[in-house]
Image 1 (cartoon, each protein chain N blue to C red):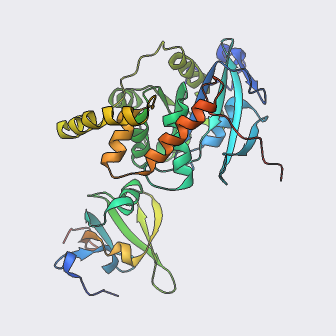
Image 2 (image 1 turned 120 degrees about the vertical axis):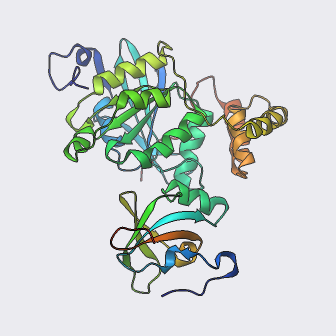
Length: 93
Length: 268
């Protein structure tokens, strides 16, 4: 389910590359304007831990756990969120 | 929160707090009730005003609106329940209503209900409100649930950091509401001085705001909260200009009342 990385963020891992049960730490939001504002209001700020809890039937959108609540985010948008993957033993990769 | 549980009959505050329903014509102070969704905002509203409320829609919007009244220390307070939102800065209808009411309706006091079990998420909204007004009381609600989850909150330190009063409550069990009402009264009467936390530590932004404000005041004579509007414009939000123009129009129609007129409740 990994998308081909585009020019904008090649070399980084983005939120949409996580599979169910995997966790990551937000490093940067590449989106701008109202989308960025909305994401930040929802708690998607640098340093926040995010976990994939569910995928919809088509795999898009995906439900994430952020600061105690669930958010559904389109893959298109998740692709603009750079993360650092947390391995299951809790260590940051 | 322990000195005034208000569930006990012996509480003197409780005796002086009268709940009103529908008489919205004569009031001394207007109080806005703001907060994130699911913070117990409506529970606080109901506990303060009683069951008789004035409900309807916000003018021209499909967003419901509730108003009620309570009396404390011989003064009448009109309480307006704002839509529950996570922010005041995005573009949804609810956020626009809440934002416009705070910026242009200028309530005497704004009570922000926050979820003590999810403080971090809620503080984002609190900081946004403190940019607009300093006449704020933080109602740290769901304290019973926080306690059950083992969450401890240093409300004195929170108060110090935010620069506005923080009152711990459990609205469901009517705990802390007496103190909340007392604090609302203190802010309304300007007996409590606040020093709201603001994002004014970036000189470049302050400079840009100061440059923009005279232009705004020239374009919109009598504009309210021009510094805040300037800040939104710098952030690229052009919708505030429409709201500002609309509010000036509404004010010129207004017959001297401080609060923007409300539509009659929807009968359907």
